[in-house]
Amino acid sequence: MRIAVMGAGGVGGYYGALLARAGHDVLFFARGAHRAAMLATRQIQIHSVHGDLLVSPVQVVDDPADLPPADWIIVAVKTPATEEAARTIWPLVGPHTTVTSFQNGVDAAQRIGAVIGPDHLLGAATWISSYIESPGIIRQVSPFRRVVLGEFDGSITPRAQKLAQALSAAGVDVSVTEDVRRVLWTKFLFISAISGVGAVTRLPIGDYRHVPASRRLLRQLMEEVRAVAHAAGVPLAPQVVDETMALVDASPADMKPSLQRDVESGRPSELESMIGVLVERGRALDVPAPISTFVHAALLPAQLLAQARTAPSGRSPAP
View (cartoon, rainbow, N blue to C red):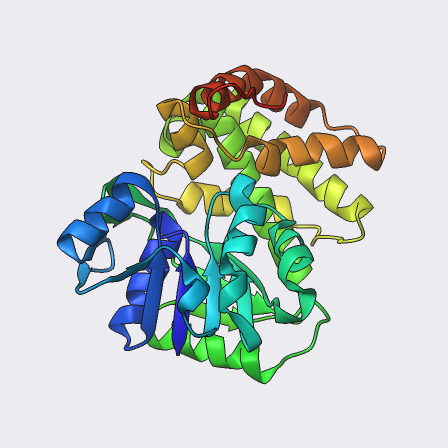
């Protein structure tokens, strides 16, 4: 397949490299020093607990205007850049192009669909811990590299099965579901909780998950996600919090989610998509969310400072 990866960071770069190694024609969209290193060396390196790999020569592109349509587009940019990414990939979207979001949060696919049209969208969720170690080099640290695909209408389609087969052949643990919205919210329950508590404590997951007070904080944040999801019409399994806490306990002790890494590095983060959305939707649906509100308030000042440092001259970030 001809595959375009919009956002060649820890997630997109890793999965794109696996698919390239499996024989697919993969185009990477990257930015900044990471893009410059990939262009200079004509390669992308992966250091992984599953084995290292090198894609060389790597195809790094800037302007898709003159390129033929892709069979599959993976969007893996940070969520604040979702609409911009959707506009960028639009020239690559042909009549039979499938687009999947490998982003965090629960609304990225719908935001992409508002730009390119919902018929191209296939729901997706991924579980992985992977990040840019240095320009041109990605480190993948989690024992899991899992993807779940599914149509938003609940059907099982040939395109979902085709992409699942491609990921499986590349070494990914993949499945196709009839209820992708529930899968997205179940994943969100995990990633939002460890992102929020990790960013507040500034510690790896192994240093706070067994401390009684911070463990309670994790559970309480997860319970808020479950309540908001239920109010939004996506009831999660009764045991979802217990199962997610077991996943927390099984995670590598040194794991830090991307939001936490961004906060610690002083970079703009996915705070609004990961925590702010719970505050907003909880308020709209009349669901109390005191833990999410606290975490959001605690992290917001640093977020605004990071946005101010990176905003174009003369522009101020929105609060």
